[in-house]
Length: 277
Image: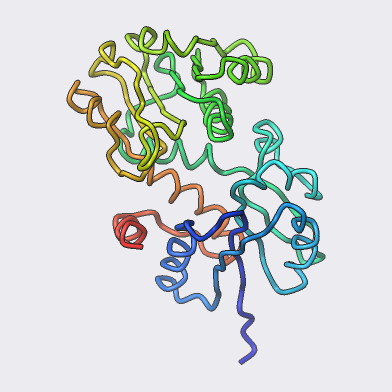
């Protein structure tokens, strides 16, 4: 009766769609941990007071999703180098004295997902092409750059956002106009779509993919549907493809370990549990 029930959760607005409760719930059950992972819809105007209150309620930490990923950096007591570089956090840990530590594990999750399916691939093997210039793009670009990618071509429907990434990340970034996106694939070692184009209920990704070669690894951070049109086209071209679900699973693991004290395994049972949710 003296065991403390550990609490964690995810905050955002909206939050009902989140699969994180099913993901962490699977791990809690698997490892027999006395704890709960709770989805919480939090308005921007309430963010500061909520983060001040959660540690007092026994929470060990929370995941952060839209629209709070950038705002939490201003409220954290300490920020990891990678979260500062990305300019956003997705994982908060509360210390015993109520201090807030902010981190970003999206890039770690992205690379781990690639390694699961194409373990021989290396960021150093050639240019990478990134579709999109939003928050996920920033995390992935930071991870690719730190992993040794020699060149990262960024293309976005709004060029100004791509230009902002070049200003932020520097010489490794080459900005490509969106209308030219299909013309920079022939020497790419990796193509990643970070946009919502191709997601269920969204517009199609209308970029010519004729330049894809079998040596290119193609991944899409979208996981609804699990196999997007981009991945189907790439597979037909002989490319190795990686769906986006693994990124979600792997980015969750560091937080779970910090909050619940167990390093969780990302495996097929977890994938099946999350897909069934």
